[in-house]
Image 1 (cartoon, rainbow, N blue to C red):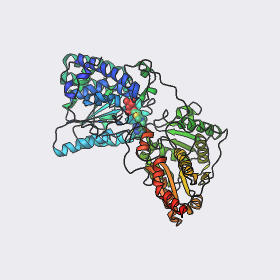
Image 2: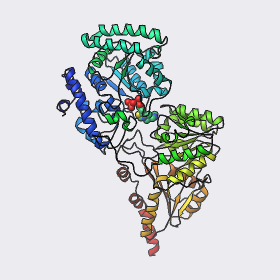
Image 3: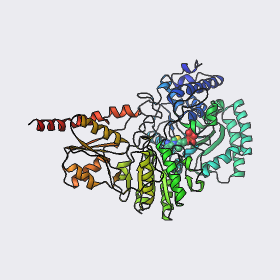
Image 4: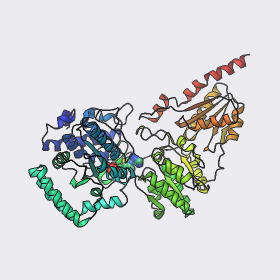
Length: 627
Ligand SMILES: Cc1ncc(C[n+]2csc(CCOP(=O)(O)OP(=O)(O)O)c2C)c(N)n1
């Protein structure tokens, strides 16, 4: 196994292979992916789906001279394997290893980094226009999944492509799946093309023609026949109306056909879109049986696809349960997800309240404005959107929700460091981007039970609110039978103490407690506060404790700039309290992928680091006592 694959060190090596050899190579790539990712975890299904497409692209084009832009770029593992990184596949998403997405700093073949959806067409157009201005000859190819076309940015790009360049190739990788099943009109539209009998008959004969004779002539025949068929069926053909010449649908697993087609498209003097039909998870039955699960997952058994059953319930699951209960009692509660029913666990809510569940596709801006619209009509929308993806919707949050003081609840899953996914997915900015917006209430729970209380509080609150909670599970605090409303803006004193005040926000409360215990052992005493609310901050309580303390310590799983510690500093400053504040959180830089604990240790988000920062104050105190 792996003989051919081991001889591929750069895309040039591919071009020495025959079509049957490329087919064998595709098989070897699949085997390597299945075995290696079974240990590292990763986006198995999407990558199994693009093996032939990636092979054909690298066969026909010449990176790094030619540019490949992958949407989301979670499906770029095969590209990485073909561009000199195959031997490091076993370091995928591991500390110090390959990033799970394209990264400009990782390889000259990764010309554009991503992790969020919908960016490929705009970025590729930017490159194509830059090439045209510079008089370059290189090709630019954007590879985007069908779900990328549920995202508005893709259409903003489409609206501009034909006006701005004559040479851009868009490959639409259509597998009918987002992470969940793809949703909306565009998904139906693509499905209609793919399942149309006229089109598929034409394509069968076209594929035979191309395979027999290859080249331009055959494809022209295909094109003419297709146009006739399309003319009959769709007077206004979507991509053609945007000025892109449409080719397809083609079998995205026929590497010979893909090579011939791409060779032809490469010669075109107009923007083109190739519609390739692929199967997510191809070559691994468990991934074909469970598309959602194998979109992205941790380690699994390479034979059966089985995974170790999850232990403790995650915050996402607790959120979905709590929301179901709220919706049982309040018919105005609705749930909105932007293509993440699985990740946010809203797929657990869906069967209970199917009419009050909305998956809007990868469309975070739309999700928020849609929620605003519902809120104007007396509904209580809970928008479950990862902290990192909600960045997309900053303006709708300001302009549509907060400015009109509408009671929309933002449930920000994966707030804090996300770990293996890396910088595109860390949720480290939400406090900063929301804190300056008037009207919004911001909360962070320290346990599952407190999350349920905060959701209940948010339901009762008459304006906008946001709750940030981390990836994975919490301390395991079982939710009460009935949640309780928290007084808005009131913190909780977890333990008393005089010399120091330690504020542990959300999931970092345990660090605050540990620090207090460490200080106990050194003969100092520290109060520990669970702030609960980032905004409004409990100024009265924090001021009261801070005024006479030697120092205040804040812990947050967020960047320091503009974060929770900054909010505390501002509040103390306004109250003319000059007690020093030691802020523990993430520095002003993008944090790489890795294990959360190791990264926390590396960047000083630890009890040890806090103790070190407190040393001068502890020494001063020791001196005072010695007098
Ligand atoms: C802005 C944004 N929202 C949500 C996501 C989460 N996400 C990652 S991949 C994906 C689905 C991608 O589907 P598609 O583009 O069709 O590619 P496939 O995985 O099916 O090959 C989603 C929703 C994201 N990356 N970016």
